[in-house]
Image (cartoon, rainbow over all chains, first blue to last red; front, side, top):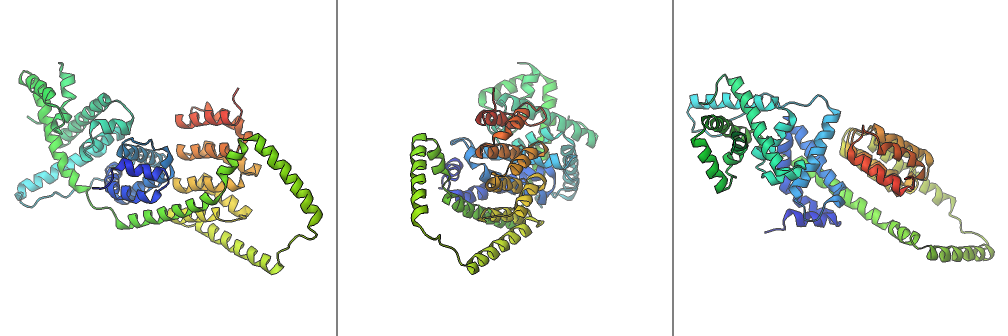
Length: 184
Length: 270
């Protein structure tokens, strides 16, 4: 088994910048997904992820040895996204195309229903305010623990808990409003 | 426990991250609270539906992006090699010891007197070699300027790095770097341009242009980089601008903090 992220980043920090290739391979896909969820645009997501890794290289000396690398990387990613938004206002919303559904054993009518559901949820998520969408992306789509999200957002774990709940609540309200039903 | 506190734990419970004791309390509460049961049902439906969106974004990244990154990494390593050859650290160590400075200065004066007296004719480079060197340097500048005007950020980045390797970059390169600092759309190109301007820092006009570039930047990283560069080149004339920046509510808090630090370093703090 290879070294953990933190040990590798420490090597990068002290001058062995070629080791960043390992961290790029481990985290590029996740970071691209983060940006694609935020922007709804894959080529843009790939560019922003690239930008974030350039900044890791440029600011490698600011990494605190032992600090959670993924949290630090996503902090940088947030700055990259903030800079992007600063130059490209208004905020880029997620596109509203119908997402593909995985699995072929689903019966056709159920498949259609799931597709509709995914489409409405996609639309509801796109309508969420940026900070609420972000906390859901980190917790639900990137499977980050609350402690890690707290490190990325630079806030308390309790604050993350409240933010995730409120974001879920708003997403749920928007989703059921669009579908014209409530869960029973 | 009240409903609000219980509901805040629902997403954690749905993700399977709630510890056993908290889950027990949640279940106990749900048994007697129909409002919270409805809340769990709704959030559970949405939580599960989100799974279908997860698959949509999980396409493998473009391999060309990896190739581009490795290219920049390689260029950066090459740049580090060049930077390591510069004797900056020795200058820092030397400057910190005034006794050594004085001794070395006296030694140099004596050496200068002897050299002036005994060396009859200074060695001169042949005109052909000088001309050839001049042509190579001009060609390098042309290449760097051309690269800095490319559409691709990585090509512009290479152009900026290339300009750093020139022994005597001319005014046109200097202007192109200043333009990149203020106007390039890519933050990484702007950051590299700031670094590349270090060799022009003796020119007060460049220092003034760097100071002027800070408020118009939209990236705090570039602003901090400019502040750092001004401190690194000991641009004492920039102290009043740092004082203004330190209290400017329009700029990022990190930038204000860095400006306060710079003010202290440049001797402008009261």
